[in-house]
Length: 186
Image (tube, rainbow, N blue to C red; front, side, top):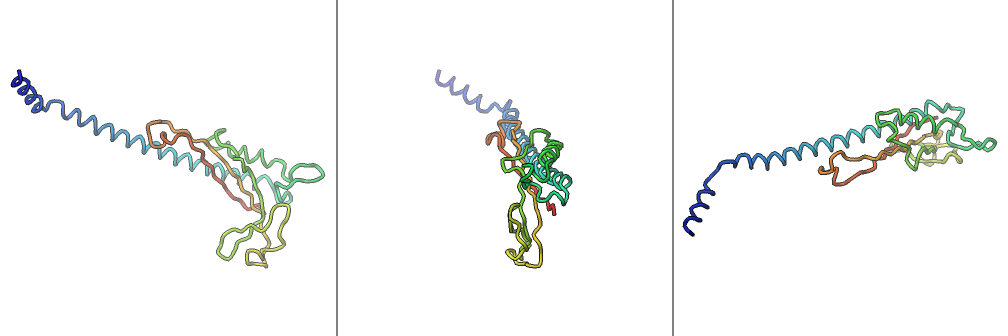
């Protein structure tokens, strides 16, 4: 019985039928997994760009909605207890949700913020005052001959949910994409 078992094992070991199918199965699974991961990462990058586009659309809507007489746009008027630009939130929300993401994108908890900024000597924006306390000039940023400008920030958020749980993005689960866009109002 022992020689018959040994002969059977030798025949089984030398039989190569089906080896290509098994190898193709292993390689195919790795190939498909790579393609699915590339698809999911590409989809995440696309959604991230769409969130950035939504933030920019919201900032443009703020600029279009609030003219120079309404600045600072988010400051409350004491007599009416409304903002100087009362349609600001409605216009920004409508603009960000008019993008391809629709109602899945929303203003983040930071929402719409506004402050006065100046360009400093290195060419970056530097805060020089809030909407309630505008600085007279940009001396804090190194240029006393220039007046501060009113900038608005639109902060949006989007919850990204992967399509495939077996991909790299799926392992990490849902993630929140937040983007901020700036616009000079005046």
